[in-house]
Amino acid sequence: MSESIISVRNISKSFGGRKVVDGLSLSVAQGEVFGLLGHNGAGKSTTIEMILGIKKPDSGEAHILGKDAASARKEIFEKVGVQLQSSAYQAAIKVGEICEEFASLYKDPADYRNLLEQFGLLPLIKSPAMKLSGGERQKLSVVLALIGNPEIVFLDELTTGLDVAARREVWKTLKELKSKGMTVFLTTHYMEEAENLCDRVCLIKRGRKVTEGTVSEVVAASPYDNLEDAYLWYMGEEVM
Amino acid sequence: MKRFFTLYKIEQKLFFRSPDVFVFNLCMPVAVLLLIGFIAGDKTAGGSDITYIQSAFASLTAVGICCSAFMSIPIVMVDYRDKKILKHLYCSPASPARILAADTLCSGVMSAISAVLVAASAVIVFGYRMEGNPAIFIGAWLITLVSMFSIGLLTAALCRTTKSLNIATTILYFPMLFLSGATIPYELFPKGLQIVADVMPLGIGIDLMKAASMGQDMNGSLVNVFILAVIAVICSTIAVKTFRWE
Image (cartoon, rainbow over all chains, first blue to last red; front, top):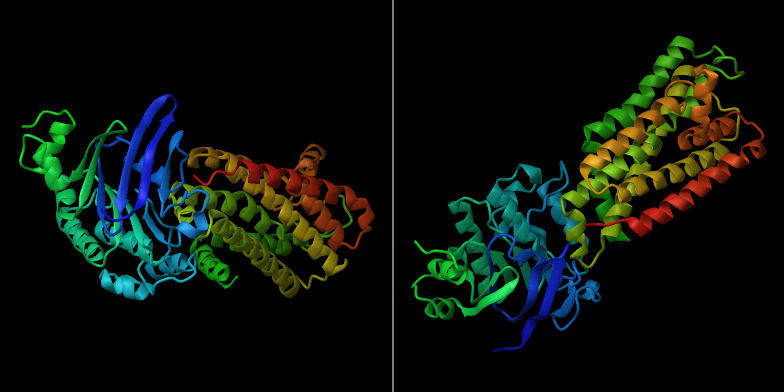
């Protein structure tokens, strides 16, 4: 395996006495699409937030590109793009304006018009961001994550709440990123999505790692032949 | 700097698109000025020796400050926190402080436009001429702005939810708007209400601006300057220390 550009060692985090992440370790290699899978409340978002330095782990450490994101923020976030779960935009802001704002944050931003074109959003450049459909809005959040020309993108439940067609379309764009060698760290609770996109997955339950590996390894180590049944089996739920 | 200006420019456009800002910050003070001016412009206000239009000029140029400080600033900051816009800026090489600074500047610019509209209406429609030195008046207006904005920033820092913010802005905004002499002429207040206005931060600022606009001896208003400065220092210090962008 090539050098890991995200490495997490034994991180834990509690909120109000409840352990949300419990001794989790993982590593992501350059160019890999890595999926962190688990139920709602399993600690996926908290894990991402600790890696990004938004939340401080109670113990353990997380590094991106060999550095602690909280202390090397300026440097790290020139190379890391982020899509946050259920984020929204300013009232009345237009698609082009939000892109211009995000481009102004980076030293050497990508041309957002090219990105909008690539994601089929260029005709909507003058539309208010809040008027976009669910799929368009999620594609816009990927555009925003890519504006800084990142080496790594974090996508937190990018396709939650989208209809099947919109989800497929977002997948298509993610596959394009993958083919360009982008490292992607994503969380999802759609197993079909993980099967389609991820090189490797890590299943967590109540903040602890249950299993980790390529999709075929994870499926092969279970009594089932697809990731969804295997996932339920790992999570200790009844498989129908 | 250029990158900050890009952000500022877009946020400023959003301010102009907000109907609340347009109505309360820009239209309302001019409308009140026209009403007071047409009803009683040249008459002396209450038992004082200044006319209604002289009183209204000084107080209505402060209404924009009131709207920006107690509505725009806290509402925008809490809204951006709720929408995770601040969190998103944390995950960039810039910091949430940049957008907060840009929006505070936008609020300042809206207050200034509001004051200019009131001043222009007073001069053009009612032939108002300032007795005092306009430079001293602008100084008084600026220190009032800084002091009120610090209270607005503190409100944004202390309110964790939209609900608590709505309560806080209602408690701050409406009394300041109506009881500090900003819209209803101070000179018309009974003695008891005048004391209320005298202790309100915005009332202290308006008193200072009135003294400056009337060309009074500013030594008598030094205590106002002192109180406004103390408010600014205390509130902005606590705001910076307690602000959470998440």
